[in-house]
Image 1: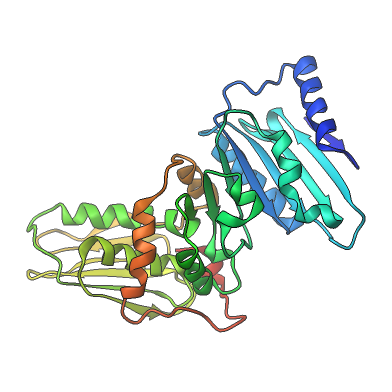
Image 2 (image 1 turned 90 degrees about the vertical axis):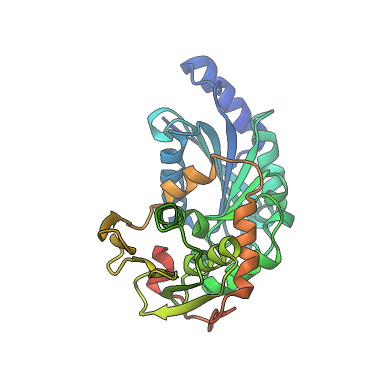
Length: 323
């Protein structure tokens, strides 16, 4: 069910929610968190809601979409309430803010938050340089960004590093989970030797490649080199050098990887790029600071061959697709 409330107020939206609950039995019982989605792109609103609805099957929540419209328009709040089949396992409030109100989304969101539930703020597109000091970021225990959505992904990732505050995370990090799991599992197999050096290869403007290199540098404490592959392939390979021979995880096509290591047959492993809904669901599983992500961010500065920025306008299709 979808209910439109043009030119309304936060109080009127709350009253409408109560009325829906009393008339239709749609209740907020069982909601585990508030998910605030912040976007300026009207085309991105539906994509973000779709991803949130999928993630809500694992994390029932109240979704509040803050869609900031034209600041030159008159001050106005247009709201839309979605419940039932149009809201997954959640209830969705789409709040379109116009005029000066567009800069004060927190004042509209606060009265609509479920009491005694944690708050997570997600910027699916362009995000502030320092999410923790953004008014909507200050409401949240957890702040989710996506460096790959920026015009200059590597520069955006560097901004995440310098402005990091406990509770920050990025979808470029959760896209790495399959790579991290496979490499960690490979080192648990014989011959149990120390790693001497690491080479990570990926597209120049792919932030997940930089994070993978930083993670390996932080965990293994060995020299790590970052190499560039042709655009369009995300992360291409990770090679861990050992005395008996290298451990190699290579993915040339963005779908299937090959894991090679001494004394073991080559293994084909599924290694497709993860959709946003999977990454979002993973990030919603924890509300405490992610120390491993922080360590990977900081260790990026110790990676050889890494760039700290990108030429303006150099964003590639690969950066949009992820690792």
